[in-house]
Length: 628
Image (cartoon, rainbow, N blue to C red; front, side, top):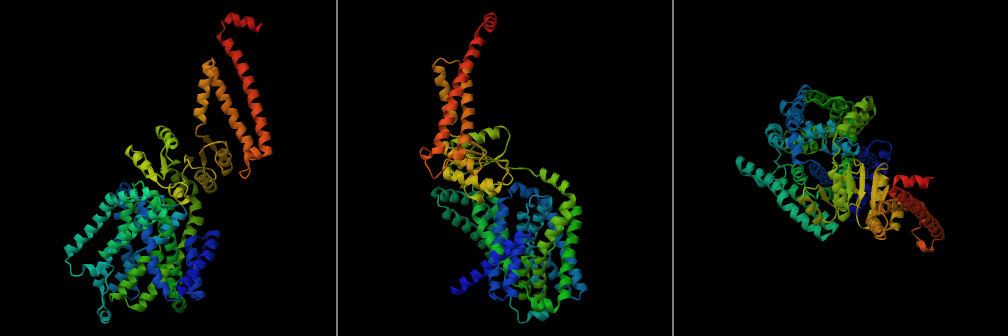
């Protein structure tokens, strides 16, 4: 326990120091984590052999990240990407493997070793690329989408690679090695090929059918309990169970969780799942990056500094060159092609897995594997610098063109409505009827179910959670309607949204005048007291019942509303939440002043309006006489 706590202190402490500094310097969190790993590993020697074990555990962050990516990708969108998945992604894997194989053979390696190295280096880092694209808001750009297609194809391509690599074993290395399968190979040992295929198909079908027909009733039941930790535990259970099933049948756990995410992309629980899984993904990915940095063998590096650096740079040049060619073929143009080429120029975390697999299967000698591991780690370490190069040297040269393309990205949710009870539903209906798309959030699962029956796009979740608002697209929204009936939650939402997106237009619901003051202070633009408008209408009917002309009654109540809003804004700065209004002398004095003013102006308006109205009902000749 002491060792565990000590390791936790070391890893977390390094991250706490390095990541904020790197982020402040504009280097990104990924480079911060890598630097943290270098600090506590090769430089200070605070961590040792446990790094490799931690890395295997932390790779689960990649699995969670693919689940989150799947949640963002509806099946229809995935189908529309099929040409890039098969064409762009497939050609990238094939051409990069061939190019690296050729380079390795030129350096004197046998063809089988060259082919194995080619497959290892064809993989790029899903963890680094998607994390960085997400941080920089580039995931929806054409280059970001092309990068995602390639990464997804690579993840699928790992499956046949595990089947091919054992066939490349070197006879001279085979002695002394024993075969260790990948994941679930032992479970499938002894089965015929067609039986293995059937098991794999059954596993994929289980993920799709189970995700669609079983998981949603389960989530609905758990949501009805309204215990957040129970929902989080269920979400983690789903991801881990899916990964375990896919591992047992020898398939990629990341691929399995990605499919589960796609199946749930249309679910009403999508945003809640995102916000629940996101923290775990972030922590595990951060830990993974730290272990990569800590695992760099500086002794080996400085022993062959120039050759290793040359091979690392050579690998990245080859991969970038292949991607630039493919970008031209698949019409990825402008800065997007550079984003694709520079973003995917590194080797990836699957390289660690594949290299370990090749050593176990006598494909690559262990000393060569150590050098290749170092090249993988160095290429990952250099990747954040390439993103900085793209951002500071390439992107500004065509900023205007890029901005125009960004505007073409469909804004799927210009309005977010937090709370969809009686109040929020009316707002949502008006916006939808006017042609504006909305994202509706509510923590009442039965509300969401009913809305979805009528085809209204709505999601389960507590809108007062910042991570849920961000997952729902707060940064992309133009308007946020806070329609929740809990005053504290409404304040939390307005306060966070105003700090996160200063230019966002926020419309909030309030119970009474005191809540109005608090919401103004929190940053709401427009505040609607939930019964105010209906009360004003009732007052108008009362005026009419006393014999006032309907036009004059409407005019009087409209004037009252305008003046009341003005009075509210004048009183708001004097409101002190720590003092009851009746015991706040400044507030009381101002309230009397504005109340008297309202009464005076309203009566004057009424007398003037009554005179005008009487004139309006007179015959023209009689009115002329009055004017005289």
